[in-house]
Every structure is written in C-alpha cells, then in structure tokens.
Amino acid sequence: MSGTGAFNGDPRLKAQALADLKAGGHPGWNIEATTDEREALAQNYGLTASFLSLVIMPRDAGPREAAISQALSAVEPGADADGIVRDWLLSVWSHPGYGPASRLRQTPAFAPAQAIAEAIRQGGSAPPTAKTWRELRKALLAAGPLGSDQAGYAAVMASMAWDPTTAPTLGGDVWVAWERAVNNERGVAHGWPLARQDELFEALRHCMAQTWKALGAPPTDASPADLAAHEAHVQARTQACMEEKGLVEDQKALFAFFEDEMRPLLADRGPAAFKTILDACARGGRSAGP
Image (cartoon, one colour):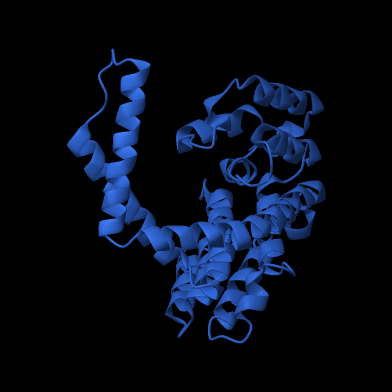
C-alpha cells in the first residue's frame, strides 16, 4: 500500500473498488482467491492483502458481497489498512462476549496471550521482529494444561502473532480460528467438540464413498425413473452402512445439537463478530496506529 493509505487517499478509487466488487470484476474478491490474486487486488486499490482477507473471509455475516461492501464503505480514503487489522485483533482479544481474554484469564495461557495482545498494540509504532513473534507464539503454545475449549482460544491468539505487512492471510486466519474456538466451546459444553464432529463427518463421508464405489454414477442417458431408483438405492445402501457402523444415533444427536445450540449461537455470534470488523474499519486503524 502506498504512503497515502487506503484507496491511495482517493475517494474515486474507493468508488471504483466498490463497483468492481459489485461486478465481480477481479478474482481476488472470491473467498477462495489465491494469495497472488489477493495481493494483486490490494495493489489495485491501495489496500493490503491482510486487510482484504479480513473483510472477505466472514461466511456468517449475511450475503458476502453486501458484507464486504459494508466494510469497504466504512473505510475512509487514506486510512491505515494494516492498522485496521491490528485494531480488529485487539477488539477480538477483549471482546466481551467471545473474547480470548475472558476465556483464558484463569489459565496459564493468559500471560503469554496478553503479551501477544500488547505486541499488537505496540505494532504501529514499534513492530515486533519475526523472531519476537516466534518467541511469543512459542511461549503461548508451551503454556498448559488447557481444556480443549480453552486451547481453541489460545489458538486464536497464536494466529494473531504475525506482522500483518508480511502475513497476507492474517485477518482471515484469525477470523477462522476465532470462529472455530467459539463453535468448539459450545460443542464441548454439549458433548460435541469439533474433534468429535469431524470424526463423525469423516465416518459419514466414508459410507458415502463406499456406496458410490459400489454403485457408481447413473448412466448419462438414464430416464427420470432410473435416476430416482438409483438415488433410492444410494440412500438405502448408505443408510445400511451407517447402521452397520453405529452412526445413525450419533448423526441424529449431532443434527439436534446443531438445531438447538449452534443455530442460535451462529445467529448471535455472526453479526456480533462482524460488527467488530465494521467498527475497526470505521476507526481507520487509528486505535492501533503509530
């Protein structure tokens, strides 16, 4: 990013970025964009890849184009894009509802996590060296013992311990780690930590793979009736595999957990978490700048 800051300090370039987003004119706007595509997009509009990864990554903030547009619209031309990322990291750390600070306070991980937050706070004027970041991560990862829910929040802080100017995926990486920590915390409380969910989904995928290997795909010229019969056969064989492996009750229990616990959590957490991004964009990086 140039010395004139976000959108190179030019409101017309900001308008161009918003129009390009709406038109889907650059692959860097896609959530699956490569680092090179994201870097190229950042160069086009006087932004940074780390900032773009932050505003593009959220999946639970409503329609993605509208959410990205909201975030970009909140950024004043000339704002410090990487300062916005640092500011947002600090707001995650201290978030009153889902912040690592409150979750780690009574654990051995609190002091090293707090040291990372302090390094982020100082990063605008005295950026830590790569060696310092490594030492901070190492100290945090060595802290223990932690419960599996607390370990998720420690992972959030470890994912923060990078220089945004040299870590093009930093914003998005922290968002994903934070999302996983919150989801896992709820899962642990109800007997469905992410590890157990992942294990069940892998077992279900294995049953599906066995079914497709045995039955194959229907012929390309199959009639509607033949397609329906094939689908029924697939479902029956998959169900039999699930019953054989004792997965049916677990699947029902997991779906009930999603409906009763995760759906309300996502409805609350998504907007609350995305608001931290909008607020950081509106502050323009001033809270974590030089």
